[in-house]
Length: 278
Image (tube, rainbow, N blue to C red; front, side, top):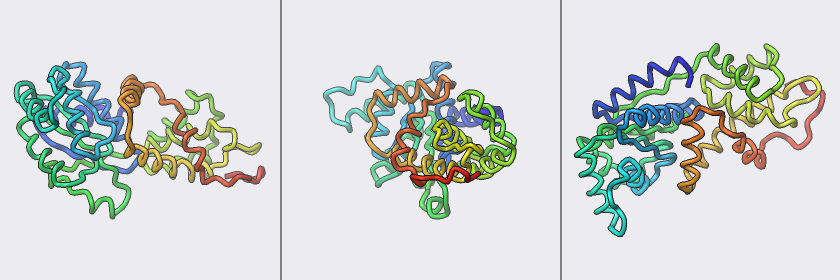
């Protein structure tokens, strides 16, 4: 996590422990998932019941997150309504925090359930992707009793520092000043966009003898960030969730599998003029 988010995340964690229900909104790639995972890491170190959902689109996703927060509650061989009742009782005895990433509130059942969590769970933090006015208008966190919090964006200096760090970490050739400026400008304050861009830059197809194909890299990084966010809405195995959490909480750079998955739908033309300078 970047230093500019550390104090802000501490304040966010404090609000959750005071019982607030919050919705963290911001563009894709701005670092919302990183914030949720850092909150989980802090609460886990303090032995506070907490669980993270990598994707939340159904009532059962929330129920499963509660089950992970309270693993001692026996929810086997009972109906989901009974399971939720037992989990509510456990939360009444010992408050915890739910972290619901890639959140999509679908239907009145989810709204009703989230409202009933007030006074039971210490705090609930949902993360919602908001890239344009249409998505902003569609987001109504007040429906389930949450307050909206805007994800702070990184400055150009912070993004440039991240770009340089990623290049060193991935052993990429350093970007010249003009190319780096274009990449930082295209990122629009989103650290995750820089991470995705440098993942893609590991592929030799994004380079020519004159340097990086910056324009192509920017187009593909933007599409890859959106493609990855949409992929979160698909069914995900428990093993994938565990692997995702372990890699991010540890702070290690994520493998570039995302770039390899995306390469099959790359918007980059099949043949690129080798004299193109980006």
